[in-house]
Image 1 (cartoon, rainbow, N blue to C red):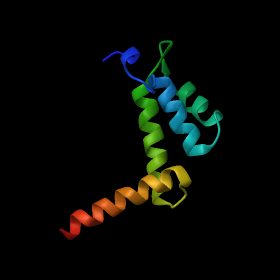
Image 2: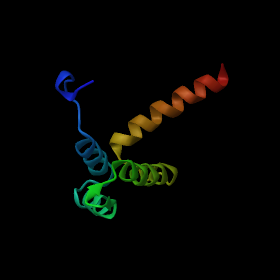
Image 3: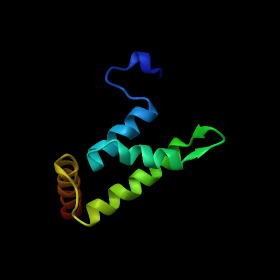
Image 4: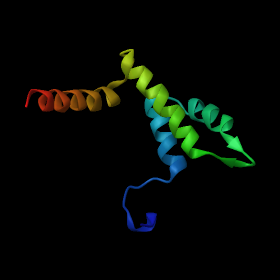
Length: 86
């Protein structure tokens, strides 16, 4: 489906940039990752996403998450715990 039909949607670059900003609180982090994931003049967004995911998971494991991700993490673990008990 085309982005023009979706409201409040992101292009890959914008989505990954927002996630990186939410994760670290600045734009430099994303730009550093993005610049390291360029091949033949094109950005490899799958690779950028993988690096962000790895850092995101590490922050959660080390209890270094911020308020935005802490809320999501709490919901995830609450639902997971309920499934284990049922």
